[in-house]
Length: 333
Image (cartoon, rainbow, N blue to C red; front, side, top):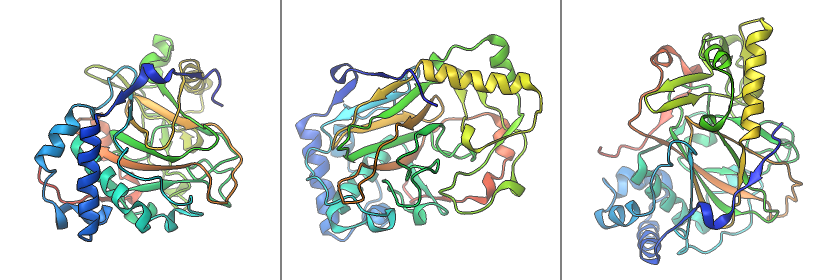
């Protein structure tokens, strides 16, 4: 359970894009949409690289998060886009003409930061995911839930090639349900607990947005914490964790980490057009519960997954990732 969350003050955390950058992004995305592009075909069918003027404009405001807090909120970059139509009932219904240019813009923004990708087994391999409440998933620990609190997790923690950065863009948030974030570098645990959690004593399974029973394919030997040159990183998803150590000491350390993340948690407020960047190696995220309406007015986020030229623990290279395959557009480095 996520408790003790503090709400951060808007002016203190938001980077605001210049009107020029927002206008250039909107113009580029709308021109690509008019030429027949969609998010999944921008690269390489319509572009082989990000246009230089756009890249230069975005560099002023769109940067990876600082590596202690691990998050960045950007406002104003999507000012050139109208609010989309009604919130879809299912993610499958979300790729409409109303959001084509906006989806293209999210691909352009992601490409300015790193290498955007998707998963063959999630949302049909699309590069832009739609996160919205869906009937039948209200109490499931996935982004389509609603009446259940979405508990702390590293995005796609089960996979060695999980994203380094998440980009979340708010389309609609009528109930002011913020994104809850907590940095492992602000979580207070003992040195003994920190050492224990670096041992490969658990497995993390794919979540229920990947439709299959994964219990028999569980990878052994994942660590919860691992050191990077600039500090500690984490890989955490208790809702889908199998412990390979029956000892209470290790499990107690794992629970204590969850409590410590609760203690340092913050809630980032979201409104239409806001973009949140989350460092997936440092920050876990979650969401409070809400009552879905299923009438076109529900909370709706879009998400992209981004790789950076950053190394993780060498032991992860031997993991199978449960056979989940990456989908990447061919963009020259």
